[in-house]
Image 1 (cartoon, protein in one colour):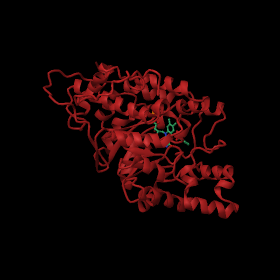
Image 2 (cartoon, protein in one colour):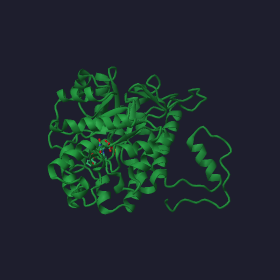
Image 3 (spheres, rainbow, N blue to C red):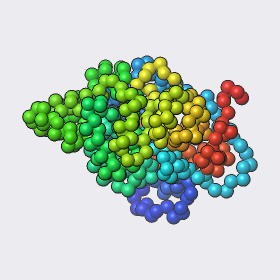
Image 4 (spheres, protein in one colour):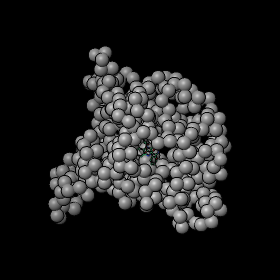
Length: 416
Ligand SMILES: Cc1cc2nc3c(=O)[nH]c(=O)nc-3n(C[C@H](O)[C@H](O)[C@H](O)COP(=O)(O)O)c2cc1C
Ligand SMILES: O=C(O)C(=O)c1ccccc1
């Protein structure tokens, strides 16, 4: 744990009150000289985590596509909207942060975004994150590029809510896709998140400078889903006459080609996933009204308005910038989720006010994982939800439901 943890010896009694807000609990603990594992300044998490990581891992998580223009715009877009401070709204309770997404209710409007290769950030990787997510009652979206198997993530997540993110093998590998979907369903992943923007990796200068692709490293991190898949294993054995373990390099290369085929599926192919996954489907990476409308036409239950945190296309638009138009076009027909650039409670509030039902958190929890494993991820999730709670409270917004948190809560900074 970080060195700024100060716990006085013999100060073991628990907080005697049960404060409603997380912030109140922090101040109570402070009275007993107990500190949180690392700072609450969410914009400092990146540089703190970077100090702990290898050059390669740091480059991988912090890095963006090309010049970083899309990622910068993601952040800048939040400052174009301001939260209207309404006064003398006679509220006497803390805001209700719960939200309903694809037919289920969640206590907070945040989710763990799918992030691959988590063992490069902390040896416990996905296990630590999946535990923290369950503990904090935040849904865990498991990446196909995980460094832990579907079965082990499910065990760590226990009775937590979890969804599976698919890196979608090309049609010639449909038997592998079916096998993955079956394992996900059997292991309690209730929804399928299909990422559309990463059938090939973007131009990533940091990783190219380091000659770094986590799939192809000698320790083959990020291939756990494939290496534990019975169909992939059987096919590999038939082709090479050896088990995956006997030729790890070839197996990693083959799995990488399977999940990053280098070309995209078409809209018609989504039907195959609908036929083979018994549960809601959410398309991740939507950035235009036209694509959002196609998602409605093919009958999926949700979309994530996302540009992959600016890691895929350089020179692109901000993700928040396109959110209102997409919500206007399809928000009454499917659930619109949001990610890319969320760093604080106010960011979540703004995306929700513009019509998102939930925000996926990407890099911030990865920094938490690097800084403090399970506790670190918990700290990040509690910070963001605690911050959101007070932000809404002070804005006079009684709940995160669209009836209270909508565009009337925002003003364009340029229009003031
Ligand atoms: C290190 C890293 C790995 C990622 N891996 C995946 C992945 O395996 N699947 C996926 O759909 N998105 C992946 N993403 C994208 C996130 O799900 C999310 O869209 C993005 O991080 C959101 O932007 P933010 O980092 O600004 O919050 C990854 C992002 C990072 C930073
Ligand atoms: O880095 C990413 O953004 C990503 O989606 C990914 C791709 C391959 C392996 C791990 C993560």
